[in-house]
Amino acid sequence: MCGLFGALSYDANAISPDQAQCMSARVAHRGPDDKGEYFDGPVMLGHRRLAIIDLSAAGHQPMQDSSARYHIVFNGTIYNYPELREILIARGYQFDSHSDTEVILNAYACWGDACVERLHGMFAFAIWDSKLQKLFLARDRMGIKPLYYAQSGQGFYFASNPQALLATGLFASDIDPVGLHHQLSLHAVIPAPRTLIKSIRKCRPAYYMNVTPDGKIVEQRYWSLLAKRPAEAMSADDWNSAIHESLMQAVKKRLTIADVPVGVLLSGGLDSSLLVALLAEAGQHDIRTFSIGFEDQPEERGNEFEFSDPVAQRYATDHHKFLIPNAEVLTRLPEAVNAMAEPMFGQDAIAFYLLSEQVSKSVKVVQSGQGADEVFAGYFWYGQMQAAEGDALERFASRYVDREHAEFCDTVAPAYRGEDYTSALIEENLSSGQADSFLDAVLRFDVTTLIVDDPVKRVDNMTMAWGLEARVPFLDHQLVELAASCPPELKLKHQGKGILKEISRGRIPDAVIDRPKGYFPMPALKYVRGDFYHFMADTLNSQRSRERGLFNRNYIDRLLDEPEQHFTRLNGSKLWHSALLEYWLQQHIDQP
Image (cartoon, rainbow, N blue to C red; front, side, top):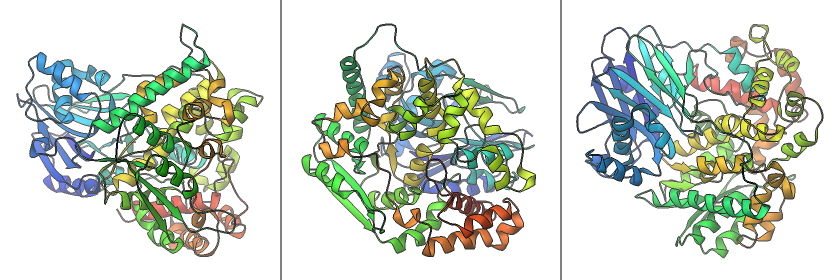
Protein backbone atom coordinates (compact mmCIF):
# COMPACT_ATOMS: atom_id res chain seq x y z
CA MET A 1 0.00 0.00 0.00
CA CYS A 2 1.54 3.22 -1.06
CA GLY A 3 1.29 6.44 -2.99
CA LEU A 4 2.63 6.67 -6.52
CA PHE A 5 3.19 9.38 -9.10
CA GLY A 6 5.09 9.97 -12.31
CA ALA A 7 5.22 11.56 -15.73
CA LEU A 8 6.21 10.97 -19.34
CA SER A 9 7.47 13.95 -21.32
CA TYR A 10 6.09 14.60 -24.82
CA ASP A 11 8.66 17.25 -25.75
CA ALA A 12 11.89 15.26 -25.14
CA ASN A 13 12.69 17.34 -22.07
CA ALA A 14 13.35 15.64 -18.76
CA ILE A 15 10.71 15.97 -16.04
CA SER A 16 11.65 18.59 -13.49
CA PRO A 17 12.78 17.27 -10.08
CA ASP A 18 10.84 20.18 -8.57
CA GLN A 19 7.64 18.81 -10.09
CA ALA A 20 8.49 15.39 -8.68
CA GLN A 21 8.90 16.85 -5.20
CA CYS A 22 5.59 18.71 -5.42
CA MET A 23 3.80 15.53 -6.47
CA SER A 24 5.56 13.46 -3.82
CA ALA A 25 4.41 15.79 -1.07
CA ARG A 26 0.77 15.35 -2.10
CA VAL A 27 0.83 11.55 -1.80
CA ALA A 28 3.21 11.40 1.19
CA HIS A 29 0.47 10.42 3.68
CA ARG A 30 -0.15 7.20 1.76
CA GLY A 31 3.39 5.95 2.37
CA PRO A 32 5.18 7.11 5.53
CA ASP A 33 7.92 4.44 5.53
CA ASP A 34 10.09 5.28 2.50
CA LYS A 35 10.26 7.37 -0.66
CA GLY A 36 12.08 7.38 -3.96
CA GLU A 37 12.21 8.78 -7.49
CA TYR A 38 13.59 7.45 -10.77
CA PHE A 39 14.50 9.60 -13.80
CA ASP A 40 15.31 8.20 -17.25
CA GLY A 41 15.21 10.54 -20.23
CA PRO A 42 11.55 11.48 -20.76
CA VAL A 43 10.17 9.53 -17.79
CA MET A 44 9.94 10.08 -14.04
CA LEU A 45 8.56 7.56 -11.55
CA GLY A 46 7.96 8.37 -7.89
CA HIS A 47 6.82 6.47 -4.83
CA ARG A 48 5.94 6.83 -1.15
CA ARG A 49 6.01 3.44 0.60
CA LEU A 50 3.86 1.83 3.26
CA ALA A 51 5.81 -1.34 4.02
CA ILE A 52 3.49 -4.35 4.32
CA ILE A 53 5.30 -7.16 2.44
CA ASP A 54 9.10 -7.58 2.62
CA LEU A 55 9.81 -4.80 5.09
CA SER A 56 13.49 -4.69 4.14
CA ALA A 57 15.22 -2.19 1.86
CA ALA A 58 14.85 -4.76 -0.94
CA GLY A 59 11.21 -3.66 -1.22
CA HIS A 60 12.18 -0.06 -2.05
CA GLN A 61 10.47 1.59 -5.01
CA PRO A 62 10.83 2.58 -7.79
CA MET A 63 12.08 -0.94 -8.42
CA GLN A 64 13.86 -2.33 -11.47
CA ASP A 65 14.12 -5.88 -12.77
CA SER A 66 17.42 -7.77 -13.05
CA SER A 67 17.91 -6.62 -16.65
CA ALA A 68 17.33 -2.95 -15.67
CA ARG A 69 14.95 -2.67 -18.63
CA TYR A 70 11.75 -2.38 -16.59
CA HIS A 71 11.01 -0.03 -13.68
CA ILE A 72 7.84 -0.01 -11.57
CA VAL A 73 5.90 1.98 -8.99
CA PHE A 74 3.05 0.07 -7.37
CA ASN A 75 0.24 0.63 -4.88
CA GLY A 76 -1.70 -2.35 -3.56
CA THR A 77 -1.36 -5.99 -2.62
CA ILE A 78 -1.22 -9.08 -4.83
CA TYR A 79 -2.65 -12.01 -2.89
CA ASN A 80 -1.45 -14.74 -5.25
CA TYR A 81 2.08 -13.41 -5.57
CA PRO A 82 3.75 -16.45 -3.91
CA GLU A 83 2.27 -18.77 -6.55
CA LEU A 84 3.21 -16.42 -9.39
CA ARG A 85 6.71 -16.08 -7.97
CA GLU A 86 7.25 -19.84 -8.16
CA ILE A 87 6.00 -19.95 -11.75
CA LEU A 88 8.34 -17.13 -12.75
CA ILE A 89 11.35 -18.67 -10.99
CA ALA A 90 10.70 -21.89 -12.91
CA ARG A 91 10.81 -19.82 -16.10
CA GLY A 92 14.21 -18.41 -15.21
CA TYR A 93 13.31 -15.00 -13.75
CA GLN A 94 15.47 -13.70 -10.91
CA PHE A 95 14.30 -12.14 -7.65
CA ASP A 96 16.20 -9.91 -5.24
CA SER A 97 13.30 -9.46 -2.81
CA HIS A 98 10.29 -11.27 -1.40
CA SER A 99 7.90 -8.47 -2.41
CA ASP A 100 4.80 -8.67 -4.56
CA THR A 101 6.12 -5.60 -6.40
CA GLU A 102 8.94 -7.60 -7.95
CA VAL A 103 6.48 -10.32 -8.94
CA ILE A 104 4.49 -7.78 -10.98
CA LEU A 105 7.69 -6.54 -12.56
CA ASN A 106 8.78 -10.01 -13.68
CA ALA A 107 5.23 -10.96 -14.64
CA TYR A 108 5.20 -8.01 -17.03
CA ALA A 109 8.59 -9.03 -18.40
CA CYS A 110 7.21 -12.55 -18.97
CA TRP A 111 3.64 -11.98 -20.17
CA GLY A 112 3.57 -8.33 -21.22
CA ASP A 113 0.24 -6.50 -21.01
CA ALA A 114 -1.55 -9.78 -20.26
CA CYS A 115 0.17 -9.99 -16.86
CA VAL A 116 -2.78 -8.17 -15.27
CA GLU A 117 -5.06 -11.11 -16.03
CA ARG A 118 -2.96 -13.25 -13.67
CA LEU A 119 -2.93 -10.78 -10.76
CA HIS A 120 -5.33 -11.48 -7.91
CA GLY A 121 -5.63 -8.50 -5.63
CA MET A 122 -5.96 -4.72 -5.49
CA PHE A 123 -3.51 -2.67 -7.48
CA ALA A 124 -2.57 0.43 -9.38
CA PHE A 125 0.86 0.51 -10.97
CA ALA A 126 2.99 1.98 -13.72
CA ILE A 127 5.87 0.23 -15.52
CA TRP A 128 8.42 1.98 -17.73
CA ASP A 129 9.92 -0.09 -20.56
CA SER A 130 13.19 1.71 -21.30
CA LYS A 131 13.83 -0.33 -24.46
CA LEU A 132 10.48 0.31 -26.14
CA GLN A 133 10.08 3.74 -24.49
CA LYS A 134 6.59 2.84 -23.35
CA LEU A 135 4.69 3.50 -20.12
CA PHE A 136 2.23 0.81 -19.02
CA LEU A 137 -0.41 1.58 -16.35
CA ALA A 138 -3.08 -0.69 -14.87
CA ARG A 139 -5.84 -0.66 -12.27
CA ASP A 140 -7.43 -3.60 -10.47
CA ARG A 141 -10.72 -5.15 -11.52
CA MET A 142 -12.81 -3.60 -8.74
CA GLY A 143 -11.12 -0.18 -8.70
CA ILE A 144 -10.02 -0.56 -5.09
CA LYS A 145 -6.76 1.30 -5.70
CA PRO A 146 -6.93 4.78 -7.30
CA LEU A 147 -5.05 5.95 -10.39
CA TYR A 148 -5.52 9.47 -11.79
CA TYR A 149 -3.91 11.04 -14.85
CA ALA A 150 -3.79 14.23 -16.88
CA GLN A 151 -2.18 15.48 -20.08
CA SER A 152 -0.67 18.79 -21.09
CA GLY A 153 1.38 19.88 -24.07
CA GLN A 154 4.40 18.87 -22.03
CA GLY A 155 3.40 15.32 -21.27
CA PHE A 156 1.38 12.69 -19.44
CA TYR A 157 1.20 12.79 -15.62
CA PHE A 158 -0.28 10.25 -13.20
CA ALA A 159 -0.70 9.88 -9.43
CA SER A 160 -2.69 8.30 -6.62
CA ASN A 161 -4.76 11.46 -6.21
CA PRO A 162 -5.73 14.54 -8.26
CA GLN A 163 -4.00 16.87 -5.79
CA ALA A 164 -0.59 15.62 -6.91
CA LEU A 165 -1.48 16.45 -10.51
CA LEU A 166 -2.77 19.92 -9.66
CA ALA A 167 0.41 20.58 -7.64
CA THR A 168 2.45 20.58 -10.86
CA GLY A 169 0.76 23.82 -11.91
CA LEU A 170 0.22 22.39 -15.41
CA PHE A 171 -3.50 21.66 -15.24
CA ALA A 172 -6.53 23.92 -15.05
CA SER A 173 -9.07 23.34 -12.29
CA ASP A 174 -12.23 24.09 -14.29
CA ILE A 175 -15.24 22.01 -13.30
CA ASP A 176 -16.39 19.29 -15.69
CA PRO A 177 -20.17 19.71 -16.33
CA VAL A 178 -20.61 15.96 -16.83
CA GLY A 179 -18.73 15.17 -13.63
CA LEU A 180 -20.78 17.79 -11.76
CA HIS A 181 -24.04 16.22 -12.96
CA HIS A 182 -22.97 12.83 -11.64
CA GLN A 183 -21.64 14.35 -8.41
CA LEU A 184 -24.99 15.88 -7.53
CA SER A 185 -27.22 13.15 -8.98
CA LEU A 186 -25.42 9.93 -7.97
CA HIS A 187 -24.48 11.04 -4.41
CA ALA A 188 -20.90 11.93 -5.31
CA VAL A 189 -20.22 9.01 -7.67
CA ILE A 190 -18.36 10.18 -10.77
CA PRO A 191 -17.54 7.02 -12.72
CA ALA A 192 -14.18 6.73 -14.42
CA PRO A 193 -12.74 8.10 -16.57
CA ARG A 194 -14.22 11.45 -15.51
CA THR A 195 -13.67 13.45 -12.34
CA LEU A 196 -15.10 16.75 -11.10
CA ILE A 197 -12.10 18.52 -12.66
CA LYS A 198 -12.21 18.71 -16.46
CA SER A 199 -8.46 18.33 -16.98
CA ILE A 200 -8.09 15.24 -14.74
CA ARG A 201 -9.16 11.70 -15.52
CA LYS A 202 -8.92 8.37 -13.73
CA CYS A 203 -8.01 5.00 -15.14
CA ARG A 204 -11.07 2.78 -15.43
CA PRO A 205 -11.22 -0.30 -13.20
CA ALA A 206 -10.21 -3.49 -15.05
CA TYR A 207 -8.37 -1.48 -17.70
CA TYR A 208 -4.75 -0.98 -18.63
CA MET A 209 -3.19 1.83 -20.66
CA ASN A 210 -0.12 2.16 -22.86
CA VAL A 211 1.38 5.63 -23.24
CA THR A 212 4.22 6.61 -25.58
CA PRO A 213 6.32 9.80 -25.78
CA ASP A 214 4.48 10.89 -28.94
CA GLY A 215 1.33 11.38 -26.85
CA LYS A 216 -0.50 8.25 -27.99
CA ILE A 217 -2.67 6.55 -25.35
CA VAL A 218 -4.26 3.14 -25.93
CA GLU A 219 -6.73 1.76 -23.37
CA GLN A 220 -7.78 -1.88 -23.10
CA ARG A 221 -10.29 -3.68 -20.87
CA TYR A 222 -8.93 -6.96 -19.47
CA TRP A 223 -11.88 -8.15 -17.33
CA SER A 224 -15.65 -7.83 -17.41
CA LEU A 225 -18.27 -9.02 -14.94
CA LEU A 226 -21.09 -11.25 -16.19
CA ALA A 227 -24.27 -11.42 -14.12
CA LYS A 228 -25.73 -14.56 -15.66
CA ARG A 229 -26.74 -17.96 -14.32
CA PRO A 230 -24.28 -20.84 -14.66
CA ALA A 231 -24.99 -23.61 -17.19
CA GLU A 232 -25.58 -26.14 -14.41
CA ALA A 233 -28.39 -25.33 -11.99
CA MET A 234 -27.56 -25.05 -8.29
CA SER A 235 -29.80 -25.39 -5.23
CA ALA A 236 -29.98 -22.74 -2.52
CA ASP A 237 -27.83 -24.93 -0.28
CA ASP A 238 -25.29 -25.31 -3.09
CA TRP A 239 -25.09 -21.54 -3.42
CA ASN A 240 -24.66 -21.06 0.32
CA SER A 241 -21.84 -23.59 0.43
CA ALA A 242 -20.07 -22.20 -2.63
CA ILE A 243 -20.24 -18.60 -1.42
CA HIS A 244 -19.18 -19.57 2.10
CA GLU A 245 -16.10 -21.32 0.73
CA SER A 246 -15.25 -18.48 -1.65
CA LEU A 247 -15.61 -15.87 1.10
CA MET A 248 -13.49 -17.97 3.43
CA GLN A 249 -10.73 -18.12 0.85
CA ALA A 250 -10.95 -14.36 0.33
CA VAL A 251 -10.60 -13.73 4.07
CA LYS A 252 -7.65 -16.11 4.39
CA LYS A 253 -5.76 -14.52 1.50
CA ARG A 254 -6.12 -11.09 3.04
CA LEU A 255 -4.86 -12.39 6.36
CA THR A 256 -1.79 -14.40 5.34
CA ILE A 257 -0.33 -12.07 2.71
CA ALA A 258 1.31 -9.58 5.08
CA ASP A 259 4.45 -9.32 7.16
CA VAL A 260 2.63 -7.18 9.75
CA PRO A 261 -0.45 -7.83 11.99
CA VAL A 262 -3.91 -7.62 10.40
CA GLY A 263 -6.96 -6.28 12.29
CA VAL A 264 -10.70 -5.95 11.56
CA LEU A 265 -12.85 -2.81 11.54
CA LEU A 266 -15.81 -4.15 13.55
CA SER A 267 -18.79 -1.86 13.05
CA GLY A 268 -21.45 -3.98 14.73
CA GLY A 269 -23.06 -4.86 11.41
CA LEU A 270 -23.43 -8.27 9.78
CA ASP A 271 -20.56 -7.94 7.32
CA SER A 272 -17.68 -7.08 9.63
CA SER A 273 -19.00 -9.46 12.29
CA LEU A 274 -18.96 -12.31 9.76
CA LEU A 275 -15.37 -11.47 8.87
CA VAL A 276 -14.37 -11.92 12.52
CA ALA A 277 -16.20 -15.25 12.66
CA LEU A 278 -14.53 -16.51 9.50
CA LEU A 279 -11.08 -15.46 10.71
CA ALA A 280 -11.67 -17.45 13.87
CA GLU A 281 -12.96 -20.36 11.79
CA ALA A 282 -9.76 -20.20 9.77
CA GLY A 283 -7.76 -20.71 12.96
CA GLN A 284 -6.64 -17.14 13.54
CA HIS A 285 -5.91 -16.36 17.20
CA ASP A 286 -5.58 -12.99 18.92
CA ILE A 287 -7.81 -11.22 16.39
CA ARG A 288 -7.58 -7.46 16.81
CA THR A 289 -10.88 -5.63 16.37
CA PHE A 290 -11.66 -1.91 16.37
CA SER A 291 -14.95 -0.04 16.82
CA ILE A 292 -15.85 3.63 16.97
CA GLY A 293 -18.83 5.46 18.44
CA PHE A 294 -20.08 9.01 18.95
CA GLU A 295 -22.29 10.86 21.40
CA ASP A 296 -26.03 10.26 21.16
CA GLN A 297 -28.57 12.71 19.80
CA PRO A 298 -32.20 12.68 20.99
CA GLU A 299 -33.24 10.99 17.72
CA GLU A 300 -30.44 8.45 17.42
CA ARG A 301 -27.83 6.43 19.26
CA GLY A 302 -24.29 7.42 18.39
CA ASN A 303 -22.73 3.97 18.56
CA GLU A 304 -23.41 0.30 17.85
CA PHE A 305 -21.31 -1.15 20.65
CA GLU A 306 -24.31 -3.23 21.77
CA PHE A 307 -23.82 -5.26 18.59
CA SER A 308 -20.03 -5.20 18.21
CA ASP A 309 -19.29 -6.06 21.86
CA PRO A 310 -20.98 -9.52 21.78
CA VAL A 311 -19.04 -10.46 18.63
CA ALA A 312 -15.77 -9.43 20.23
CA GLN A 313 -16.68 -11.36 23.37
CA ARG A 314 -17.74 -14.50 21.52
CA TYR A 315 -14.42 -14.72 19.71
CA ALA A 316 -12.30 -13.27 22.53
CA THR A 317 -10.78 -10.65 20.26
CA ASP A 318 -8.29 -8.03 21.34
CA HIS A 319 -10.99 -5.38 21.12
CA HIS A 320 -10.48 -1.60 21.04
CA LYS A 321 -13.36 0.87 21.34
CA PHE A 322 -13.12 4.58 20.68
CA LEU A 323 -15.83 7.04 21.74
CA ILE A 324 -15.49 10.42 20.03
CA PRO A 325 -17.07 13.56 21.53
CA ASN A 326 -19.40 15.41 19.17
CA ALA A 327 -17.32 18.57 19.58
CA GLU A 328 -14.38 16.76 18.02
CA VAL A 329 -16.37 15.67 14.98
CA LEU A 330 -16.82 19.18 13.62
CA THR A 331 -13.36 20.41 14.55
CA ARG A 332 -11.79 17.45 12.73
CA LEU A 333 -14.05 17.75 9.67
CA PRO A 334 -11.59 19.99 7.76
CA GLU A 335 -8.91 17.30 8.11
CA ALA A 336 -11.23 14.63 6.74
CA VAL A 337 -12.20 16.81 3.77
CA ASN A 338 -8.54 17.51 3.15
CA ALA A 339 -7.99 13.74 2.88
CA MET A 340 -10.65 13.38 0.15
CA ALA A 341 -9.21 12.90 -3.31
CA GLU A 342 -12.66 13.83 -4.64
CA PRO A 343 -15.71 15.27 -2.81
CA MET A 344 -17.51 12.59 -0.76
CA PHE A 345 -21.03 13.09 0.56
CA GLY A 346 -21.10 10.08 2.88
CA GLN A 347 -21.13 11.47 6.40
CA ASP A 348 -19.32 8.40 7.69
CA ALA A 349 -16.14 9.62 5.96
CA ILE A 350 -15.19 11.53 9.12
CA ALA A 351 -15.91 8.38 11.16
CA PHE A 352 -13.56 6.31 9.04
CA TYR A 353 -11.00 9.10 9.24
CA LEU A 354 -11.09 9.27 13.04
CA LEU A 355 -11.22 5.49 13.41
CA SER A 356 -8.26 5.04 11.08
CA GLU A 357 -6.24 7.50 13.12
CA GLN A 358 -6.65 5.32 16.20
CA VAL A 359 -6.30 1.97 14.44
CA SER A 360 -3.07 3.02 12.74
CA LYS A 361 -1.44 3.26 16.16
CA SER A 362 -1.87 -0.52 16.59
CA VAL A 363 -1.79 -2.15 13.14
CA LYS A 364 -0.91 -1.33 9.53
CA VAL A 365 -3.54 -3.55 7.86
CA VAL A 366 -7.26 -4.08 8.50
CA GLN A 367 -10.02 -6.07 6.90
CA SER A 368 -13.26 -4.20 6.29
CA GLY A 369 -16.78 -5.19 5.20
CA GLN A 370 -17.25 -2.74 2.34
CA GLY A 371 -18.92 -4.19 -0.74
CA ALA A 372 -21.15 -6.78 0.92
CA ASP A 373 -24.32 -4.71 0.54
CA GLU A 374 -23.75 -4.17 -3.17
CA VAL A 375 -22.57 -7.68 -3.99
CA PHE A 376 -25.32 -9.40 -1.95
CA ALA A 377 -28.23 -6.89 -2.30
CA GLY A 378 -28.29 -5.57 1.25
CA TYR A 379 -29.80 -2.12 0.71
CA PHE A 380 -33.54 -1.44 0.97
CA TRP A 381 -33.81 0.07 -2.49
CA TYR A 382 -32.98 -3.15 -4.35
CA GLY A 383 -36.26 -4.77 -3.35
CA GLN A 384 -38.14 -1.59 -4.19
CA MET A 385 -36.56 -1.49 -7.64
CA GLN A 386 -37.41 -5.14 -8.22
CA ALA A 387 -41.07 -4.55 -7.38
CA ALA A 388 -41.39 -1.27 -9.30
CA GLU A 389 -43.02 -0.88 -12.70
CA GLY A 390 -41.73 0.99 -15.73
CA ASP A 391 -38.61 0.75 -17.83
CA ALA A 392 -35.17 0.09 -16.36
CA LEU A 393 -34.28 3.77 -16.03
CA GLU A 394 -37.55 4.62 -14.26
CA ARG A 395 -37.26 1.70 -11.85
CA PHE A 396 -33.68 2.58 -10.96
CA ALA A 397 -33.72 6.38 -10.93
CA SER A 398 -36.94 6.73 -8.93
CA ARG A 399 -35.32 4.89 -6.00
CA TYR A 400 -31.71 6.01 -6.31
CA VAL A 401 -30.97 9.29 -8.10
CA ASP A 402 -30.52 12.27 -5.76
CA ARG A 403 -31.82 14.93 -8.14
CA GLU A 404 -33.80 14.59 -11.32
CA HIS A 405 -32.41 16.63 -14.19
CA ALA A 406 -34.87 19.49 -13.69
CA GLU A 407 -33.83 19.87 -10.06
CA PHE A 408 -30.16 19.63 -11.00
CA CYS A 409 -30.70 22.59 -13.35
CA ASP A 410 -32.34 24.45 -10.48
CA THR A 411 -29.42 23.58 -8.17
CA VAL A 412 -26.58 24.98 -10.28
CA ALA A 413 -25.94 28.25 -12.06
CA PRO A 414 -26.94 28.47 -15.76
CA ALA A 415 -23.34 28.01 -16.96
CA TYR A 416 -23.32 24.43 -15.59
CA ARG A 417 -26.67 23.28 -16.96
CA GLY A 418 -26.50 20.81 -19.82
CA GLU A 419 -27.84 17.44 -20.84
CA ASP A 420 -29.14 14.71 -18.54
CA TYR A 421 -25.79 12.92 -18.43
CA THR A 422 -26.73 10.76 -15.45
CA SER A 423 -29.79 9.19 -17.09
CA ALA A 424 -27.69 8.39 -20.15
CA LEU A 425 -25.08 6.72 -17.93
CA ILE A 426 -27.71 4.62 -16.15
CA GLU A 427 -29.39 3.51 -19.37
CA GLU A 428 -26.06 2.51 -20.88
CA ASN A 429 -25.12 0.37 -17.89
CA LEU A 430 -28.51 -1.29 -17.40
CA SER A 431 -28.70 -2.29 -21.06
CA SER A 432 -25.21 -3.74 -21.40
CA GLY A 433 -26.45 -7.24 -22.26
CA GLN A 434 -24.18 -8.75 -19.60
CA ALA A 435 -26.95 -9.56 -17.13
CA ASP A 436 -29.84 -12.03 -17.09
CA SER A 437 -32.42 -9.80 -15.41
CA PHE A 438 -33.09 -6.21 -14.39
CA LEU A 439 -31.84 -6.72 -10.82
CA ASP A 440 -28.79 -8.60 -12.09
CA ALA A 441 -28.02 -5.53 -14.20
CA VAL A 442 -28.57 -3.18 -11.24
CA LEU A 443 -26.21 -5.12 -8.97
CA ARG A 444 -23.63 -5.39 -11.74
CA PHE A 445 -23.81 -1.61 -12.29
CA ASP A 446 -23.47 -0.99 -8.56
CA VAL A 447 -20.55 -3.38 -8.05
CA THR A 448 -18.51 -2.38 -11.09
CA THR A 449 -19.24 1.35 -11.18
CA LEU A 450 -21.12 3.00 -8.32
CA ILE A 451 -19.37 1.33 -5.39
CA VAL A 452 -15.94 2.20 -6.82
CA ASP A 453 -16.43 5.92 -6.33
CA ASP A 454 -18.43 5.87 -3.13
CA PRO A 455 -17.65 3.45 -0.25
CA VAL A 456 -14.53 1.92 -1.80
CA LYS A 457 -12.91 5.28 -2.49
CA ARG A 458 -14.04 6.63 0.87
CA VAL A 459 -12.41 3.79 2.80
CA ASP A 460 -9.20 3.97 0.74
CA ASN A 461 -8.87 7.73 1.25
CA MET A 462 -9.64 7.78 4.94
CA THR A 463 -7.47 4.80 5.89
CA MET A 464 -4.55 5.86 3.71
CA ALA A 465 -4.69 9.32 5.28
CA TRP A 466 -3.10 7.58 8.26
CA GLY A 467 -0.88 5.09 6.41
CA LEU A 468 -3.35 2.26 7.07
CA GLU A 469 -4.13 -0.41 4.47
CA ALA A 470 -7.76 -1.55 4.22
CA ARG A 471 -8.49 -4.92 2.62
CA VAL A 472 -12.01 -5.73 1.42
CA PRO A 473 -12.70 -9.49 1.14
CA PHE A 474 -16.25 -9.00 -0.15
CA LEU A 475 -14.73 -7.42 -3.27
CA ASP A 476 -12.47 -10.37 -4.06
CA HIS A 477 -13.08 -10.63 -7.80
CA GLN A 478 -13.60 -14.39 -7.74
CA LEU A 479 -16.21 -14.03 -4.99
CA VAL A 480 -17.84 -11.19 -6.94
CA GLU A 481 -18.00 -13.34 -10.08
CA LEU A 482 -19.64 -16.16 -8.15
CA ALA A 483 -22.13 -13.86 -6.43
CA ALA A 484 -23.02 -12.14 -9.71
CA SER A 485 -24.10 -15.49 -11.15
CA CYS A 486 -26.29 -16.25 -8.12
CA PRO A 487 -30.08 -15.79 -8.55
CA PRO A 488 -31.15 -12.37 -7.19
CA GLU A 489 -34.03 -13.87 -5.21
CA LEU A 490 -31.53 -15.67 -2.96
CA LYS A 491 -29.79 -12.39 -2.23
CA LEU A 492 -33.08 -10.56 -1.54
CA LYS A 493 -34.23 -13.13 1.04
CA HIS A 494 -34.59 -12.03 4.68
CA GLN A 495 -34.87 -8.33 3.68
CA GLY A 496 -31.57 -8.46 1.79
CA LYS A 497 -28.22 -10.26 2.00
CA GLY A 498 -30.13 -13.49 2.41
CA ILE A 499 -27.18 -15.75 1.63
CA LEU A 500 -24.85 -13.94 4.04
CA LYS A 501 -27.46 -14.08 6.78
CA GLU A 502 -27.86 -17.83 6.34
CA ILE A 503 -24.09 -18.32 6.37
CA SER A 504 -23.86 -16.18 9.51
CA ARG A 505 -26.49 -18.11 11.48
CA GLY A 506 -24.72 -19.87 14.34
CA ARG A 507 -21.49 -17.98 13.72
CA ILE A 508 -22.51 -14.57 15.04
CA PRO A 509 -25.27 -13.54 17.47
CA ASP A 510 -28.84 -13.65 16.10
CA ALA A 511 -29.32 -10.06 17.28
CA VAL A 512 -26.69 -8.91 14.77
CA ILE A 513 -28.20 -10.98 11.94
CA ASP A 514 -31.82 -10.02 12.56
CA ARG A 515 -31.37 -6.33 13.31
CA PRO A 516 -32.56 -3.79 10.72
CA LYS A 517 -29.93 -2.69 8.25
CA GLY A 518 -27.73 -0.15 10.04
CA TYR A 519 -25.59 2.72 8.78
CA PHE A 520 -22.58 4.25 10.46
CA PRO A 521 -24.22 6.41 13.17
CA MET A 522 -23.03 10.00 12.93
CA PRO A 523 -25.70 11.98 14.81
CA ALA A 524 -23.62 15.16 15.06
CA LEU A 525 -23.46 15.40 11.26
CA LYS A 526 -26.83 13.87 10.41
CA TYR A 527 -29.06 16.47 12.02
CA VAL A 528 -28.58 19.88 10.49
CA ARG A 529 -28.58 22.17 13.48
CA GLY A 530 -26.30 24.10 15.82
CA ASP A 531 -22.63 24.34 14.95
CA PHE A 532 -23.03 21.95 12.03
CA TYR A 533 -25.66 24.21 10.45
CA HIS A 534 -23.53 27.31 11.02
CA PHE A 535 -20.56 25.59 9.36
CA MET A 536 -22.62 24.86 6.24
CA ALA A 537 -24.21 28.30 6.16
CA ASP A 538 -20.83 30.01 6.53
CA THR A 539 -19.38 27.87 3.74
CA LEU A 540 -22.19 28.48 1.27
CA ASN A 541 -22.54 32.18 2.12
CA SER A 542 -18.82 32.86 1.99
CA GLN A 543 -17.41 35.38 -0.47
CA ARG A 544 -15.48 32.61 -2.21
CA SER A 545 -18.64 30.58 -2.75
CA ARG A 546 -20.48 33.56 -4.18
CA GLU A 547 -17.56 34.45 -6.47
CA ARG A 548 -17.35 30.88 -7.74
CA GLY A 549 -20.97 31.05 -8.84
CA LEU A 550 -21.43 27.29 -8.96
CA PHE A 551 -24.85 27.21 -7.32
CA ASN A 552 -28.16 28.93 -8.00
CA ARG A 553 -28.36 31.24 -4.99
CA ASN A 554 -32.16 30.99 -4.76
CA TYR A 555 -31.83 27.23 -4.39
CA ILE A 556 -29.16 27.54 -1.69
CA ASP A 557 -31.27 30.08 0.19
CA ARG A 558 -34.21 27.64 0.20
CA LEU A 559 -31.99 24.91 1.67
CA LEU A 560 -30.66 27.23 4.35
CA ASP A 561 -34.15 28.44 5.25
CA GLU A 562 -35.39 24.84 5.71
CA PRO A 563 -32.25 22.91 6.68
CA GLU A 564 -34.01 19.71 7.76
CA GLN A 565 -36.60 19.53 4.99
CA HIS A 566 -34.66 18.72 1.83
CA PHE A 567 -33.47 15.13 1.50
CA THR A 568 -32.59 12.81 -1.33
CA ARG A 569 -34.34 9.49 -2.01
CA LEU A 570 -31.59 7.79 -0.01
CA ASN A 571 -32.09 10.21 2.92
CA GLY A 572 -29.06 12.38 2.23
CA SER A 573 -29.21 16.06 3.18
CA LYS A 574 -29.14 18.23 0.08
CA LEU A 575 -27.80 21.08 2.18
CA TRP A 576 -24.90 18.92 3.34
CA HIS A 577 -24.20 17.83 -0.25
CA SER A 578 -24.01 21.44 -1.40
CA ALA A 579 -21.88 22.60 1.53
CA LEU A 580 -19.46 19.67 1.30
CA LEU A 581 -18.93 20.23 -2.42
CA GLU A 582 -18.22 23.92 -1.94
CA TYR A 583 -15.96 23.28 1.04
CA TRP A 584 -13.97 20.65 -0.88
CA LEU A 585 -13.44 23.14 -3.70
CA GLN A 586 -12.21 25.72 -1.21
CA GLN A 587 -9.80 23.20 0.34
CA HIS A 588 -8.42 21.63 -2.83
CA ILE A 589 -8.91 24.07 -5.69
CA ASP A 590 -8.74 27.52 -4.11
CA GLN A 591 -5.74 26.51 -1.98
CA PRO A 592 -3.89 23.90 -4.08
